[in-house]
Length: 192
Image 1 (cartoon, rainbow, N blue to C red):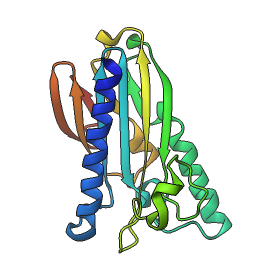
Image 2: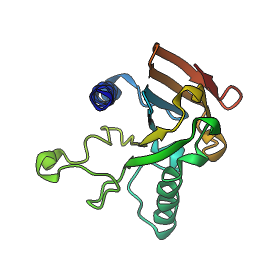
Image 3: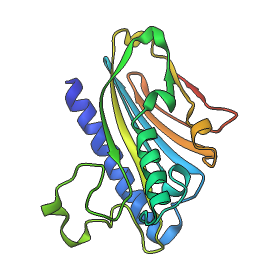
Image 4: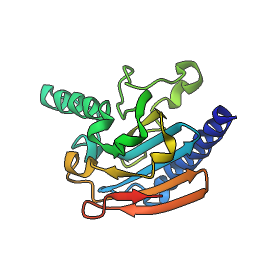
């Protein structure tokens, strides 16, 4: 049952992200300094999804061209692969990272994330770039928690890692219902 709930939640977030992406083509949903954080708590599982403009996570949105830009991009990917530097969970909950998937904005065919090249076809990069050249990056993290009852919130420490990120719109699905909030560098803790 837990796996079904997580899959449904992931599908819901994916549909929401897809909708937001298409909204960005004409309505300006892509906003520098503004990221999105979605999470689900189901039984002993915690899933966190982070999406933000590549300009805030990397420093630019176009494909890395120079050696300096490629190094900057690699550094951004490495940061996304270290969620403990981005989020703090109550240690008493005993949450351990069990899976992570990057959703990296990059126009070359050596993406850092998984997808089916056959299905993507000619529109391969459209999911990451709109007509104005805006690109989003992100990651999805799945944790298994030994004592999930002690998981009562999270702290978004990523504001110190990404100083140009000014706010995170948060949506969550909890055993007791849904929650939504906005986190900022000065108000970066969410409790439930």
